[in-house]
Image (cartoon, rainbow, N blue to C red; front, top):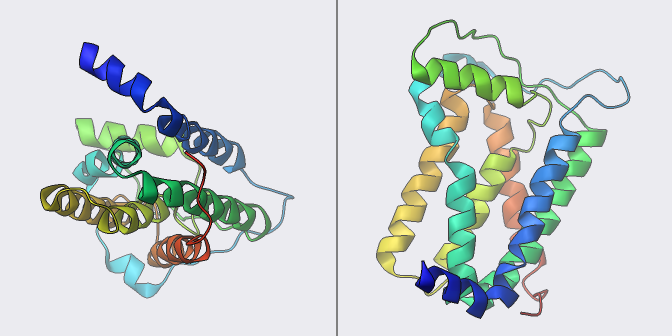
Length: 208
């Protein structure tokens, strides 16, 4: 505990920037409703109908936020250069996605009902209840996962850590489909927004 507190104090100038990530999460929740009463876009492709619902993957799906925060914190402590790029990149990509949510809103159709009583099925129903189906394209889950991969791959973190991040993030991306929380085009949009934000902010770093 003493080591944790000392680390927090020593690296507070960097770690405080994580508050932006938390603030963006609050804004996401505020955006996740129907805007202006306009017809909603539907981006389902034939391939989406062939992807099965796998309820237990909701455990993987819900790991995205703690793994993202943990990885961002690691970068804040061990690779300030990458972290100083990551924050504006993630902020720009996420805010741009919010604009899409508001002005080009789509709905993820939840055609597959979850009626079982297993722990995974109950968690999936709870997740659906808490997360309205409006903020589908681009997927913030996939945006965050792609951004995390880009940052870690550019960092000086150990190879074992990079492998863990790659595997975990790809599993989370896959889980967005097998939980029926997103469709394929949502994934493409999320990855595109992350890569675009990363490239546009190469020379825009926060002061740590």
